[in-house]
Amino acid sequence: MSGRKRLFTYGTMIFGFGLAGYLVYIGLSQFTWDQIVESVRAIPMSNFLLALLYCAGSYLCLTGFDWTGVRYVKNDLAYPKIALASFVALGLGQSIGLAGVSSGAIRYRYYAHWGMSTEDVAKIVLMSGMTVGLGLLVLSGIVMVANPADVAQLLRISSSVSMLLGGLCFVLAIVYVVLSGVLRAPLKIRKWTFVMPTVRIAILQIVVGTVNFALVSACLMELMQATENVSYLKAATAFVLANIAILVTHAPGGLGVLEVTVKHVMGDQASIGALVAFRVIYFFIPFAIALPVSLVTEAVFRARKKRQGDTEKTSHPADADPALTASST
Image 1 (cartoon, one colour):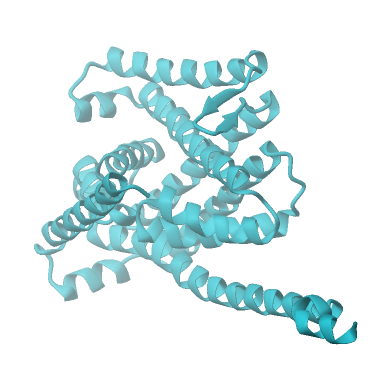
Image 2 (cartoon, rainbow, N blue to C red):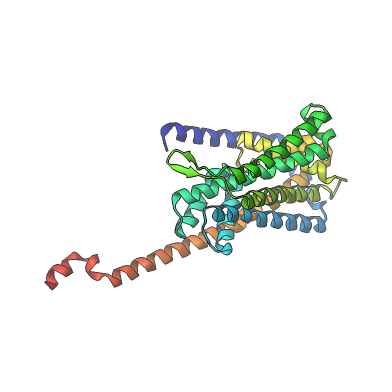
């Protein structure tokens, strides 16, 4: 990494953490600890369980992000391995921040261990990022067309413009699929070549990406519905706008940005308890599971590598010690 890139990366991280800290302070300073605890306790267990179910469905969809990427590079790696790499990478990366960089590094550790090249891993990360963008694009189109009044009010545009933008989102997704069918010439990015995915993979990206964000929106809605009558479309609108804000600010895990944006969109319908519970369910719990899983798999990788090294030394003792060869002659 060059000096400028390193400076940009570290500067972005510092800015993101600083912004997150400031927004968390702004968001929580108006509440006491007892008020926050009481607000969380007001959420019925049934809502918690449904929110957990939606969260699990989202992380299952996220494994599809990696699956499409692995199939794109024409690798037949088994799904359980793909799911392991995806969950650990995103369970950690989404909380650490700069998910494209952090989760990409974790993915490289797993996929390289299973024999993939650096170029293949880079393509998998790129395809995963495209799936994120496509899913967010299509869900944005849905909320702009189906809920133009709220979007228009929040973005200070007319309802007709909101519907026009929503239609444009759908058109862009369709163009991506069409290009996947007709544009077969490879594109060169520095020393790597990139070709459009097949139409089947492109459609899978759109479906999996959209369903993922739809499930996350449902998770958020379920927690807010514990105290208020919140429509799914409004919750999805809040989540889409929050994700756009997160992409712009690079705050780690969207910390503070997500909560402030959703609160701005939903007003009093988004209780502090619902926002805290969503943060715990969608970010903290997966992180708490992914961290020990990553440590265990790292230990397994190291042990396996050590056994392979010992086996090679046993199989080729002369190669391990040239002096033995000399003495035998």
